[in-house]
Image (cartoon, rainbow, N blue to C red):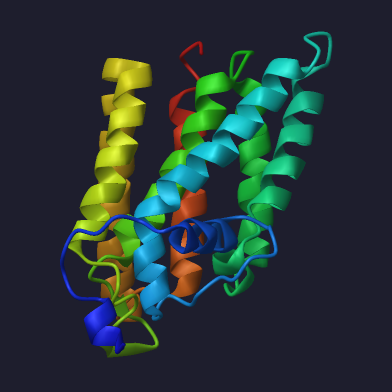
Length: 229
């Protein structure tokens, strides 16, 4: 089947292979991770928030089990190490973003240290919104390496809509007005990033997807510092 046929509009139920591809793209598990131009990337995109939620649930679970006698900076450092290790999936491995990742990881460490303990919602929301942001940045984006083509032709409006509805439903249900605030701020920043990269680089690259996702994760943690989980 051709790429055009695979990428044609229309709602479809996800298959187990789509979930496995999403896991391979967003986590360090040794699974196949299709490139953005592959049709399989588009099929996996609606499931990115599911994988982000699983990573976030794991981090929140570790936070819940961490002894409260630990200094906040120590538990935060453990969480950052586990988070960065677990999130080194196919998308990140293809991106030239190591230095940026280190800087953002240090900033995340600072944000986690400042967050009220237990940091359950921030740790759950940040990977979820970071995974969703990849879909937002990819949908309809020009390829920075070749602006005459799409970066991810399989990520169409349907994929964006399904990923967004799933993300909003979870965030709004768990945090109500606070969730709306976080999503609106994240969406505004993603729109700004899309505009900036299209104007300055001619489009979006895999590195842009990774950096945008990491920035949204950091932004989510920072926005939730004044609020108790």
